[in-house]
Amino acid sequence: MTTTVAIVPMRHNSERVPGKNYRLLAGLPLYHHVVRTLMAVPEIDRVIIDTDSEIIIEDCARSFSDAQVLIRPEHLRDGAIPMNDVLLNTLEQVEADVVLQTHSTNPFLKPETLSSALQQFSSPDRAFDSMFSVTRLQARLWDENAVPVNHDPSVLLRTQDLAPLFVENSCFFIFTPTLLRERHNRIGYQPRMFEMSALEAVDIDIEEDFALAVAIAQQSEIETRR
Image (tube, rainbow, N blue to C red):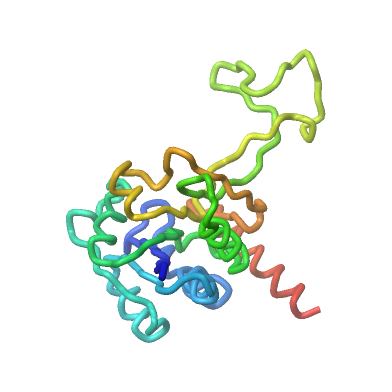
């Protein structure tokens, strides 16, 4: 039987958005939104929270008794430490066949999105070794030297007619522990992209992102009440 675990890494300190993981959004600490989502995904067997935050550790004991909390060791707490190193440490302590890794900063991620992705990954005839979420981008892009990247300025195509590019939005990654250990990367040799809407993929990285998330949450509450 395949065991699927979801891992949510959370540092106590955040340089650009202080205290963001436990800052209130729609009346709940930010990280509650994604953990609630993960708990609602039937394909996920266990939710693992990797953190160095006493606030999150204590709050998890009250709010998410079914989640497993792992205390991140001191040498992996710096913000410059690659996430792959953090995940390798987590998987030394957790038995898993399939891993879904997400972030507390994706509050609008939907359970049905993760279910669909995990179902695709569990297909016995899949031809890909990993999966990551993306957002479609159809816009005229230029590099720092004002050189067009994905279009010919002499041919004014409508943006919707441009060949799409895809942004890795970091909402989730699906992989096996074996792949991570061999490649030292969540994305394998033959990955599949999973496209999501820009609204669902909102990621809180700076203060403006948090303000946007608050506005979206407020609008969603208004729509629910109608």
